[in-house]
Length: 230
Image 1: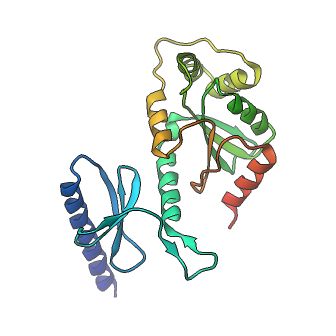
Image 2: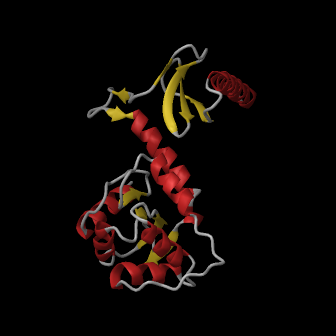
Image 3: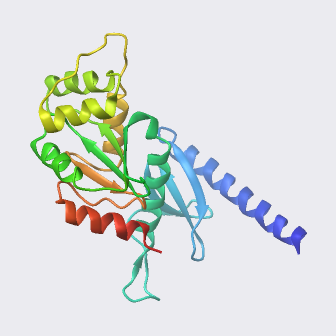
C-alpha cells in the first residue's frame, strides 16, 4: 500500500510539473507560482501571477472565475477558499515587512495595510486600542502623498516601531527618521495591490479573509473570533 501511494504521488507530481511547463511556454511573461490538482475531475488549479485560474491536464483550455461546490447548502466557493489559503501563505511569508504589535496573549491575528495620513486609519487605531489578545501586523502603505512616505519611513526606522506607529496614529507625534534605514514601502504597496486592495485601511484575518476597511472594535472582535473558531 505504501508503495502504491508513493507511485500515485509521483504520478501527480509529474503531471503538475508537465502542466507548469506547458503553461510557462504559453505565458512566458507570467509567473506560474503553483499547480495543484483541483478537487474535481479533469481540472488543475493554477496560481498565475498571483491569480487563481484553472486549466485541463493538456493545457488546451484555460479559464478564471469562481467554482462552487453545490453539494452543500449554502454552496461553498472553492475558489474563494483557495484564494484565502494563498493569502494566508503570502502574508505569513511577509511578516518581516510589517510592524508587529502583541496585545494581551496575542493568540489571534490581524493584518492591516495603512497610510499614516489616512483619516480612517487613525480611527481604526483608536478602535484597535480597545481590542485585546491579538497580534497585529501592520504594513506601511503610504499611497496618499510624499508626506505619507516620509512619515512611514520615520516610523519604520524608529528604535521601537510599534510605539512610534501608535504615537503617530493616536497622538500625532512624528518620530525622528534615520537616513541609514531602508523601509520596505514599495514591497508593501505591491503586496497590497496583489490582493486587489486599492485603498487604506485594509484588514485581513488569520484565515486569509479580507474584512474591508474601517470597522469598529466590536466588529473586529467578532471577525477575529470567527477566524479562530473551530
